[in-house]
Image (cartoon, rainbow, N blue to C red; front, side, top):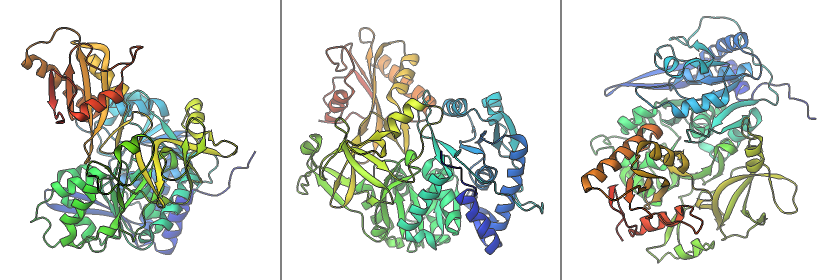
Length: 575
């Protein structure tokens, strides 16, 4: 049995080193807004180190090694200090989010129930989370309003062993939360891979709006600037959504070299900013805009460049990538200095598992290359035979490397299924991603998902969860005769729900009312607004001979605009 290492977390050790060598250097800036007024709040490396060290002392006093500590702090400096304190104390962090407004807590409740924290960290002004979640939070510790401490005690960094650094909850499922066990070594490897793959992170600020409880936000937005010793600048995702120009203005003001976000964030920046807001905006310092967490769309990349070229943005700054929480974050990344590559592939050939380029076919599938491996081994595999496939052939993407995590917390069966794959005749273990893709001309392309996972605006949703909500909401619908799927219109993926009526069709306005009720219930329970809710007659959903729903066929008919329907709330594709 391998002995546990006797050294602190790699990220914690980095921060301690920066605090010793440049104590007065700005480490992190949180941008808060009142209308159009920006109010920065910052910590130096020395201040951050001491704040994390003080909180780590409290964690040691109130918890035991191996305990989970849930982080439900507000987005910003509180979250940074809370996460680092867990690393300093050798406690297992569980990055989550506070309750805000009338927000549905089902996702949060599921992760809390699965992780069973001994203690939860909250921001000082949070009056909603504790009464909303209750005793499942364990002991409560609130961070002080002022993080700058006068405590002169030198921070202690506990050595770490085989326990995870944190649990990354990956799914949008309210019924089956999956906590990926990310080890200290996995996080260190992932940060080193990004540091090498994106040279700009070595010497330029990183500015983002990504939520810290998400894998991309935690690694790219929180951990990477601290690992690299460059300034990290963050704003709450809600501030970006309210006024997208804030993100780009912050990139300009702080001369960011690196930023990132999913496809929908770029699209929102295009549609949600005005010509007047873009006046005097200077994005010429940006070397890399990392794009991941959902399918990368060539049209959106081009629209973003067209919109912000006058502001100095270069198309080569687009840096598409592919990754997942089970690999800590990145699997492949585009070249920081090269323009993104898009090819149009024959749709019929792709459906048959062959990648054939046909740039002249307007009806072809335009896919963006997601770059090359960023320090790990990537294989495209036939999952039935467990053999590696040649280039230009579609298969399941498998990954092996130092950034691939150990498994799922408390779920050995799922761990073995996902993390224990082996190729025929080779002993090493691989991570099965569940995504289909292929290699072409040196890059990895993502074709689709092996499973029916739905991804909308960077968040995962399981069809069974959505379908259960519909059944519980509308007694007019036949139980077990609901199907939910993602519909990709070439610009984005939307959630579509198709449901069979239990009896004879009613008046159109009555049916529309049922569909609107279903739509509202899904939005409330799952925090996603369906693009379309379609009601069909009894027997209207395609099924197999054994009576199982044919979700793929239903998706195909909807996409072709040929699904017979009684009423649709939302958008019905035209044939």
